[in-house]
Length: 403
Image (cartoon, rainbow, N blue to C red; front, side, top):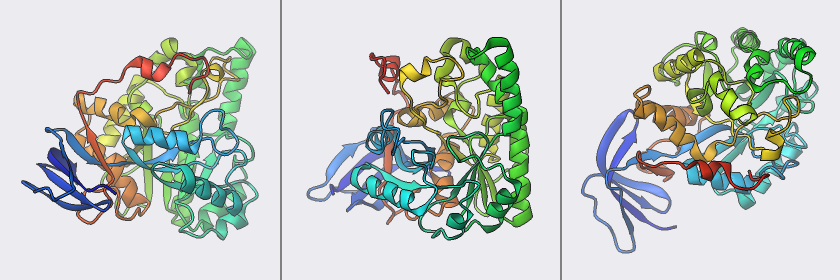
């Protein structure tokens, strides 16, 4: 590994800023201070006042391998993470086959060991019939059990009340939930189909996957967690209503925590007219009031973690009518830039963003020696230029099926 000396950086870490230097030896942070001196062989980089942050730990990505690699794979998406300042990721189980047993989970780890450019972990998925796999899971083998309490692919919708109760009672690791109430969604979609058939307008998506569906399912998950004392982490909060269900304050010591995603800080339902199914995701992007409420909840610590729910598809798939157009956005390469937009407009502090993307996930998932800038820790570092601009052509691409 190359030894580094980064000088003249605005170091942002643990609620503080320090203008100083960081030396790296053998892949670990050796010293943090001022006026540090380079040693023979050091590669010296003058940060020129740019922000130096701990690498982002993304607790929710979909990398499409195995089974969906025409969209993306672990190697390609981990490269996108690296380009975007994400140095660790936790990947979801709804692949083909799904990671709902030990064999598929271990195969994912083996593949990532071969090709991933950044640090990785993989969730075990819950189903209505894999309770034994959940109970026997080695707590060091997965950061959590992913429970889809809303519509999902394959057999991964857990809708049997007895099974759901047993998972919350017996899970040996944190439960990670996607909370949307499926009967509510199906009823809303049936009404929309009666009017529009398959070609439902994109702006109907947040009415089909409604706030009522989100609040009902999130309330159920929190109730089960309180009943059993479960360690629960609710993913991708999309409504201001749900924010009130979580306590403000630091993540340390909480038994019930929440996460939102960068697109919920950026887009609103007004953007469907312009972007259509390109911003179709589950749960759905909703109103200006929801976006603003989520941003406030993130600022005050009701929402603990900021992630991506990165989910790439082909452009041709996104161009299909509503009932066939898949849900999900490709986000990892520009997630930090999206978050910094809220810093530049005064809605969030940079210190709070660093807490939500790095410190909090490291604490929540007990990630050792990462997520903080501390001497002796792994040198997962991001140097960020606040004046950096993302060009639309870098995202949209020129080919019909470009990811």
